Image (tube, rainbow, N blue to C red; front, side):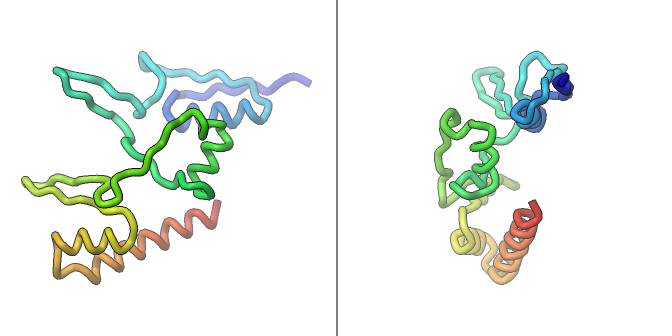
Length: 143
């Protein structure tokens, strides 16, 4: 039987992951990239001594049993990609008009931290967090 051949256009996270999945399932895969290096938006570059990340700078759902951990295990990346937990008190910081807003990890820390910036919005922040959690839970249950 002749092996099926597939061409994947683009060597970003999606293209490379797709290529590995197809190869693990018996396809002969060729990945094409128009840029000078692979990685798509997963690249960094330096200019005038400053380092810039063009894509994601953190990922979630990598705790054992979660969605991305399952994918990393399937792609056989878990042992090769070192991961560390983000700062629980502020995994991301948004700067707006000279102020900085830290995004804490977890429901109660998120609501508490955001309420310190927006004290009259505690209930709204709780509803927002719960809505995002429900949407994420619905996505997990359909896949």
